[in-house]
Length: 99
Image 1 (tube, rainbow, N blue to C red):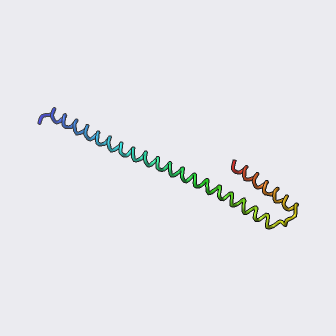
Image 2 (image 1 turned 90 degrees about the horizontal axis):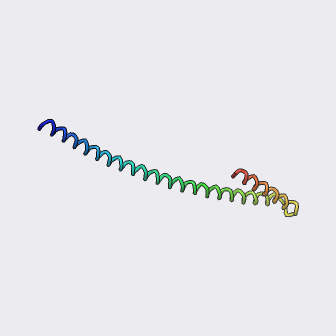
Image 3 (image 1 turned 120 degrees about the vertical axis):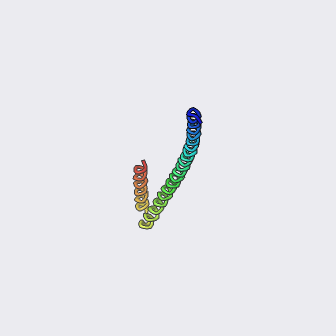
């Protein structure tokens, strides 16, 4: 085998190795992109679940406040007005904290 033949074989091997490397890098890139999309989907699901839990918590908190205030006050009109005022203040505070 002469020197030119060795150079040609070396170039062919390097080209084949580069193609294989490029193919593997494309596989890795596709895998990483798929993992990124999956992570984004999981993040969206987590965020939606968290938002739903926050809403449920807030609704339960409001229901408990109403129940608590109603059990403390008697049935006369002044007490009911006080309950309405307290609940309005609670809602106002809640809306301010959400924004």
